[in-house]
Length: 230
Image (cartoon, rainbow, N blue to C red; front, side, top):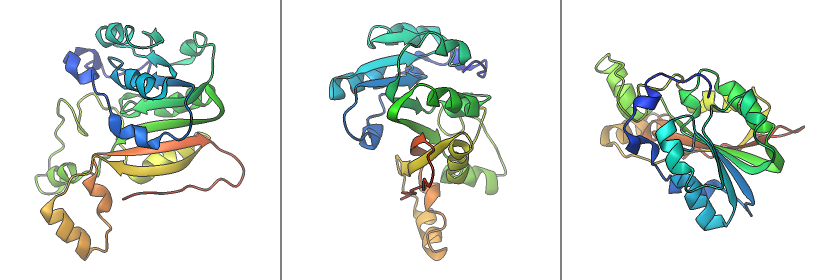
């Protein structure tokens, strides 16, 4: 997180306050410790502490939201997530979260490599990543011939990287991780898309989702990717 769009720190403070309860379904088993990278105001980490009675650390470079997170989490680092950050972290984590964070980074690959160094034995990385093939985005691109940035959402003006379901899997695979689950979240229904998708034998199903959730672990011999797109 050493290289972010300069507008990232100019967002309305509410931008950093999402709780993201839809990601809890991707956690399996006991959680003793978790690291929330780009934790914002710490609301997601606070929820983890309440639900799992676990220790939660947060990393957030934006000063206002980091100050809020510091009152909710066990430890808060108001620094970018980079090699220097590793020197300040003296433990391993069962889960490391990137909740709509990787797309803000110049080098999301480096962030994943750093995260693997902080995983405990059997630990997992869970990420939520915006889907550039989301129907409203594709409609703007194809019908209106426009690529318009917005204050939030898939076309957030602070996004530096854009991903499809396939490129998300490739990002993790190329950085020593095996994707166990990839699943669309926060589904929207669009009448015309549903009709077109039926005609095209479900080839456009991914366009219903503004984001995908990914669960990944360190790659091992003979690992297979399980795709749970819905």
